[in-house]
Amino acid sequence: MSQFDEIVHRRGSGSYKWDSEADADVIPLWVADMDFRTASVVIEALRRRVEHGVFGYTLVPPRYYEALTGWFASRHNYVIDPQRVIYTSGVVPAISAINKALVKPGEGVIVQTPVYNCFFSSIRNNGCLIVENPLLRNDLPDNEFTYSMDYDGLERLAADPANTMLLLCNPHNPAGRAWTAEELLRVADICRRNGVRVVSDEIHCELTRAGLGYVPYANAEAMSAQDGPGAVVCLSPSKAFNTAGLQIANIVCPDEATQRLIDKAININEVCDVNPFGVEGLMAAYTPEGAAWLDELRAYIFDNYAFVRDYVRRELPMCPMTRLEATYLPWLDVSAFGIPSEEMEERLLHEAKVLVNCGEMYGAGGYLRLNIACPRSVLAEGLHRMARWLKAQILDSNA
Image 1: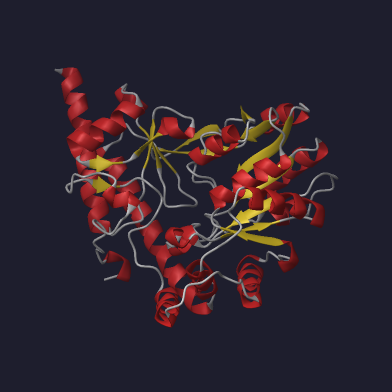
Image 2 (image 1 turned 30 degrees about the vertical axis):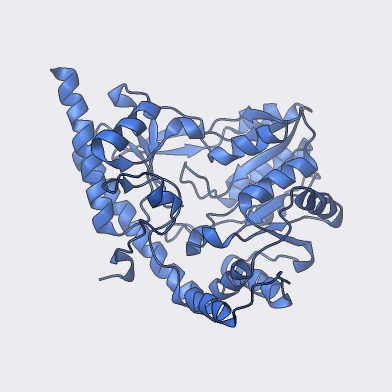
């Protein structure tokens, strides 16, 4: 039995995922946090900090930067200059501050839809325009599909001087892609040639399938022969180590001038302070003990993915699903039922007692996003409820 098979009861713990719905019978397969305890090395570090008993303002120590840069250098061959790192309370606050710092109101920010919903709100809240460069769906054998980038479309949008930034999701949520070095280099060439700044959200970077490594966008950009603005990269241990509540993230800036602009926006937005638990959690996670736990987690998640893939092929053959390369968030095509996915989300919640995310919130109707980072027994029950309800819709339509 895997440690990740243990059911940790979260209802009543102040969990956004589990306590947002009052109905205790609902199985939540929605918001992207995991139902697993974090690594024991992180728990012990936090316990020691709690036992100290004093929780004043936090001074981030040099070993924080050493942990961050050492982890990415050794695990991902990504060399980060610690002098160019800005810490903050999360990747979403980071993206909002970067938008405020580098994009003028009324300018366009390119996003590759379907994409993480907070990209849209961050762009709108800063008075900027959402410019969609939709991903291209590619159907595969065995009831699967994947996505690729529309480079011609990106070239056209980047050539418009009104569009000054590309907000990249690497790896991509909800498309489940771990972009290759070749794909990212094409993006870098297009954007640098046209003077478009790339901001890369790499929060899911640790959660790739075995044999499919994460390629840091900055590494791909460094191979580009084109001149242009350097990328800004957002990183956090929160998705991989299930520590979103500790609220810690890092912005890696390409140069001092860009860093000054972003640092000013971070202070204007009042997200310049972090709590001691976020700092301690990161330093504990980015260790050999953290790495060993993470490797076990990745194996379990992609065993869960294989379980879901086989179940959907068998029970829901009318529902193609992404071939998941990264994240724990499969993307399911439910367009065959002819029910808007917003309506389907609501009806699954109230009639099947399972909570998922509808595709509309990511910019693509006809899909559902599932969170499979939970014990397999919970996942199996959630899938069974979904399948039973979906099959009933077919029977009703044929009645």
